[in-house]
Image (cartoon, rainbow, N blue to C red; front, side, top):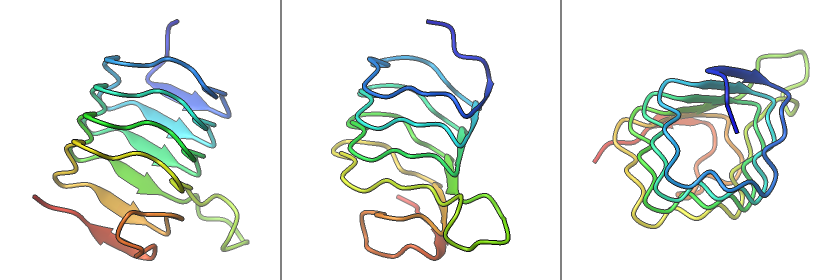
Length: 115
């Protein structure tokens, strides 16, 4: 399956994306519910208004990934949702989160993770 560097409103629901290299890809309003991204390289990728509920991100390289919302007239519309996502072993160095629902530390307004 080919994934273009810029994807809008695409469904990756339940897809097996293990060990894929998706560095610097931009995803907007994409659906990754239940997708298997174990060991994937997503360095510098951007997820804007995406649904990552129950996605498996274990051991994924998420260095400098941006999880954000799409600015619209409705503050709830366009938020990225990571509720139930699995993060064990994921590299979260330099990750930026802005108005993300379900972020692991419970803080969903904005911030940068380092480590």
